[in-house]
Amino acid sequence: MKGIIYYYSSTGNTKLAVNYLKNHIHNAEIVLCDIANDNIIECDSYDFVGFASFAEYLGPPTLMKRFIETLSLQNGKPAFVLNTYGRFTGPTQIEFAKQVDARGFKVVAGHSLIMPMNYPPMKRKGKHSTSEPSPKEMSNYDRFIAQIERSITQIEEGEDLKPLLRTFSLKKLVPSMARDKVKKDFGIQQIDQEKCVNCGNCARVCGYNAIEMNPNPVVNHQKCNGCWACYNTCPKKAINAKSFKGEYQYKGPSKELVDRMSK
Picture 1 (spheres, rainbow, N blue to C red):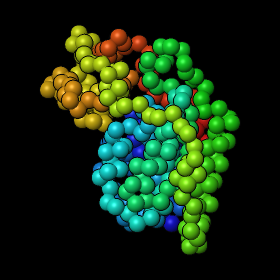
Picture 2 (tube, one colour):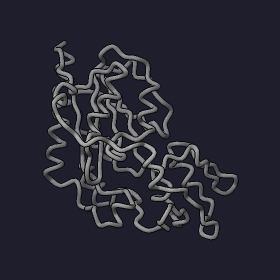
Picture 3 (cartoon, rainbow, N blue to C red):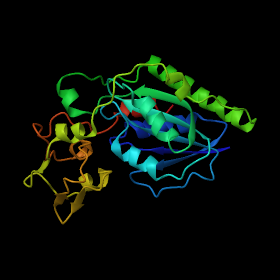
Picture 4 (cartoon, rainbow, N blue to C red):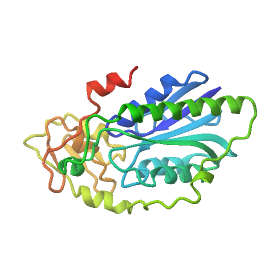
């Protein structure tokens, strides 16, 4: 059995979670594809497909939604969704599942994994924890991975899998927020040329290709989605966003978290 996982990770949390999942699936060969940085691999030759991203305003990020819409229509190919989040996941999982289902995949499993907060406005309010995911959360994540392994076995044996969306049909969830609020809360970022060293990091981490080096960073604000990736990872804190000037950055998973999720 072969599977592919498409993922989007702006600060490294989701990438860490996906690598952990890959390393703990023992009954299938898993290939990872970073939709923001890798050459896209077609999923037609794979037996099942995974989709993983972070929660952005209680829904999947715009980049993942756009990517899913580019995939060829499927005829019930098994799939699962995984989202990471910093404090409140809301309807992210069900919206994610609906987007994947709309392309003809049969979503059979889903999970939401809490990770350290990487959203500066929430970090400034003190609404974050650096100790996530807790042992309980990791135990739940391990059960989700075991569920995927069982589904793989069922696929091999030709069993019909129950679609995940059926389990959500009667749930009332807080709706996701409008996509334009993402950019509005981020504001129009400014580059502090006195601090900027033209390292190009902001252009590399931007999944929306909104920053070009010419030779200084030039931002296309029409393309910018306000995801905070450039702000969070600027080594010189040279990017200002609305009322933020380098404070409360999230530069990626801590060494402790990496070590815990590498076991």
